[in-house]
Length: 331
Image (cartoon, one colour):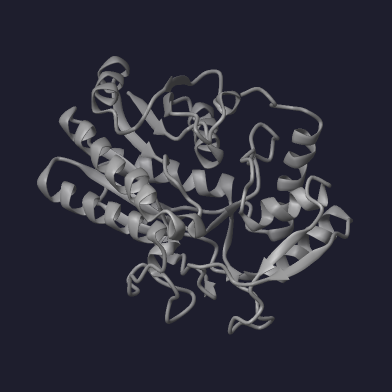
């Protein structure tokens, strides 16, 4: 048995590959390297450079390596970009997922773990938000992921196919052992941007919107450590292999922090001050979204180990130091 990880050269995908290799799983990565990095893939994993929508390639990989499960990360993920380029996002996140599912089901692969998003909720009526809440995405990004969830539901009803869709909240941090981190150029994730600014890679950073109906007027998010997130994927994989039911689960801690609170945490942990300027709100950003996270614990037995904002920030800062020192500069 082997696991195929799409987008395994990217930020979250590369951490997933680390976790799979650490667990002794034979691992194959399919990535077009448009945003991922060859050096991010663990040397014990097999890297195939290609597109997830290439059905013949996916079928060949499944046959050659005896793939029994797919963990699907490959996607476009920037909310404001999706508002500006909806067709590009529907192609990357929905059309290509449809092609991947066609190849996977055609080859008889039964287990599928999907990288979904809290953006499917839009601006929730209540926080923390549960999996049963109204789904009302505010951006093409959120809608593209929701349509993919619907495809999974329908495919599972028609075939011998089983899935877990994990709705991520805000993923941050880096491998505690310093083996991987977020290397994305021009990243938009708050903790990454703040850590880059603290490290002197940016002259200043912006806060997008200060008039939201929150305690300090800035957006509130639930930040989850990337290592805890990939641990949830391992639990999901074990659940499916054991014959478990199809599931849709939130991945978050159930605690929210505002943009200004996060920036303050980065300044405190780094010991550095840096300029912060206020900017207009970005399209597609909800005011606040925090996970209700009891279901994933009950269904998968998931127990996060890094539920601490200062620790998340410290690991992200340590990765910035490695990047600044020239580590992992290869393409």
